[in-house]
Length: 186
Ligand SMILES: [Zn+2]
Image (cartoon, rainbow, N blue to C red; front, side):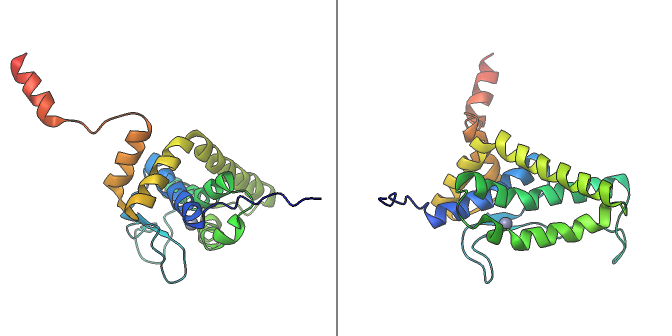
């Protein structure tokens, strides 16, 4: 049987899609980011830097208020969104391997918020995973736009992510000068 010509996805684009998954999930879940980059770090192909996460009012104490739990859940979804975006773009890429550090970080958070009951725990993690999958599906256009911007600029700050998401929705950056001028006339 003739081997199918392999159309292996461009590895840099795979990285850009993975990081864009994190960035777009952060954007829509209101998790602050400092920057997202496809410039390789020491132990990763790219990364998203978040401001230091504050889960505790005092060091070493987990904030288990409703707000604290909600924040942890959103971070878990952001952590999972990278590999899920990668899986959608390149299902045969090693997305599980690429996402292993993300999953480890997510599990650390998960153990803080989950139930002692195994059945409840499995349902909770399945629901969070599904929320991450749906987010990637619903915002795929934005993920592609952020990935393109990453391939062009290598690094984006939060404003750069927002601009790329806006472009994906056909929004032009607001021309403040023109709006002000029109306001004066009217
Ligand atoms: Zn990642």
